[in-house]
Image (cartoon, helix red, strand yellow):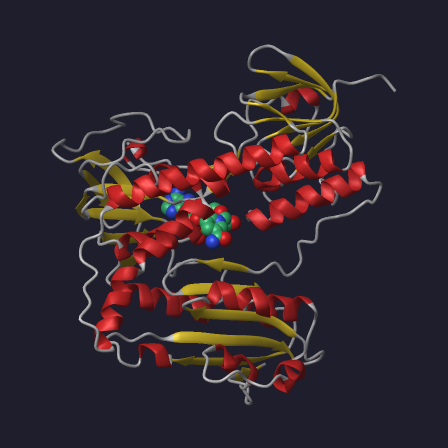
Length: 473
Ligand code: NDP
């Protein structure tokens, strides 16, 4: 074998790439990693972590309202974005440092610049340096995309939210997926007047229908003007007459948006509405362009995702890909598992296919929607099922002045009795579904759930006390 500069070159310093680089280095490999933006990638710098901190920040107004119901003379007052933003920036700096230290202390060489594959065994850095590698791992993630609407560049994308100079008074959120619903709730909690347009009949397509309905009605009760079957067909800056064509070219590149400023949105029904700001949360696309994939012979599908086999190997044997750039399940913990499995396969002589079955996830709306396994609709298309579902107002909000409906739901196979799916809409559903995920992953039956004695008084005790199916097919 010819000698190479490194055993592994990782392109992309997000959750998946960093995990693969560290574990490969720990297994004795000589590893280099290139990242052209901030170390930590989408999750740490412009995704899960800052989003969750914004969720926490946005919940206090509701908590103060609830506290008043319990006799506290509490007012949350006004939310100060600048105070929060300074803390957020400092925390992200700290976390970026942690990620860097994790890599360097593992012996990984960091290149803070863009890298491209120049042939199946060579990577070329932005400064012209060529590094030969036995294996190349593409972990470049994805980026938010704007729809093809005139003047789409007037809208922000999720990357821009964390860098806003000030909170707008009003915001239009376009989209009905994870990011749209989460930010609609966050911004509403922070005191922004939020309107959300979703092009279909109900938000959160693909999630359990009953759960989607509960989340949507709770979002409306909290003051979000959620308009379904509605989309934006035109955008223009306020004060500018409607013109044919674009005022400026929409750009899918990250962080290019003009953030605040009054925009006028024309809807599918022809109505015009004015907003201080607009967020497009209309999906993400893989970062697979301009990294030399075509020349190296790596296959990319129509959506731009790198095609890989069960072991994350591309059509070029020395090149692997993990995480959002492969568009399998686009979640941080999945990318991390894919990174670990890559190291097992390539550097530990232990071929390991990452397990994509029964991955739990949570939409951090208010309330949260935690989910694992099949929806009622998908399960019914597959086999005969029983559905155990209960919706109620939890004790904690008994003294509140707003309905606070939660949902606890199990989808059960009639034949095997296995719990095929669990869907929870409640505060803290993310914490609950993590635990239920173990039981569902273990293939436990409804009777196993029934044998488990309730913890009382809790919301989740309903998951082990529902006796009679709500529906059966
Ligand atoms: P999603 O794919 O979840 O949602 C995109 C939304 O935009 C959908 O409602 C879609 O509608 C709508 N949309 C797409 N194109 C258009 C258009 N041209 N005009 C109007 N609406 C449009 O993407 P997100 O960006 O919200 O999130 C990307 C992924 O990131 C998620 O799927 C998830 O894997 C991950 N993520 C996970 C989080 C978590 O775990 N909590 C949080 C955030 C992101 P339609 O339904 O009709 O297609």
